[in-house]
Length: 170
Image (cartoon, rainbow, N blue to C red; front, side):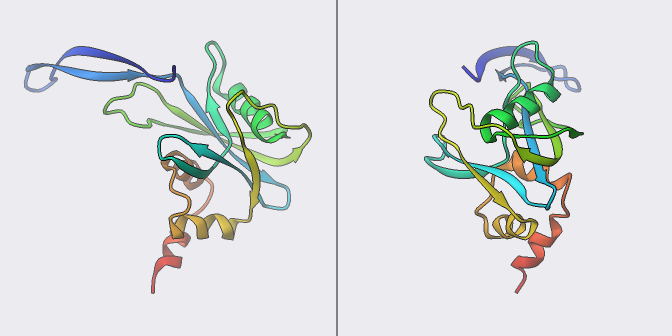
């Protein structure tokens, strides 16, 4: 189970009022901005049940219990795409939805990635690996084809996404 719901009784820090709030406990997540030496980005395309459609996303997934996020990023990139890298940069983390979730999503940049393995997918995963140029990534953001908030957040730490907005201007 990815999310475990719990109800907390809290006291508002300013008013002192007590109230109940739902908190979704979730493991940490990772996303990997993976870039080949030639500049192309590695994406995965998969079916997402929440929106009942296919999405293009960065490789990533759950951090296993006791696993460091950096190791999870390396594992997820290799498992989902078969790509590996020796050059990793920690891009920091974000809170996916702090209104109700207690987890973080860690972003990493993998440079000069190379396909060194086959995919090693979990049961239920059916992932197509794609490579996109920077222009194609920006076009997909501008067109709305690429909408995953955590993917766009990770990309914003590597690319100037204002260029995607420029594509939308008349």
